Amino acid sequence: MQQMDQPQFMQIHPVCVRQQQPQQTSTIMVGNLPGNCEMYQILPFIAVYGQIVNMQFCAQGQGVQTALIEFSTPEEAMNAVSYLTNMYIPGHNLPLTTSLVMMG
Image (tube, one colour):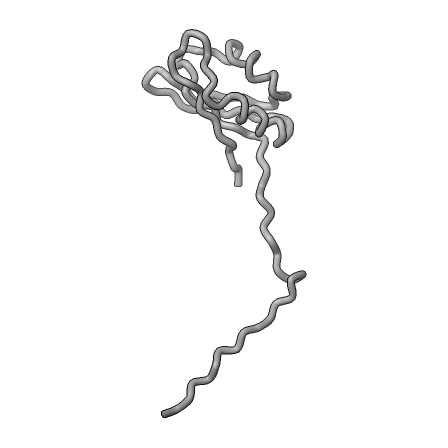
């Protein structure tokens, strides 16, 4: 019976291994917005969480719509997500859904 050679493994110096840093994003998605609301109506209660750089509605259906909102810093975006999630808009019976949007 022939003996099999043991596989040889290269040792890699830790400095040579590039670790992927988690990307930070300043953009959030807010869903379950009332289908008939306008930017000027929701801007005041979203702007309290940071400086808004850009905001656009991106989807609509079944009486609700979704908006992409870009804040000036990732920290502001994370703060907005933590406070806006499950918030109710007066006169609308669905809680807001929010998430960070990873742009790549």
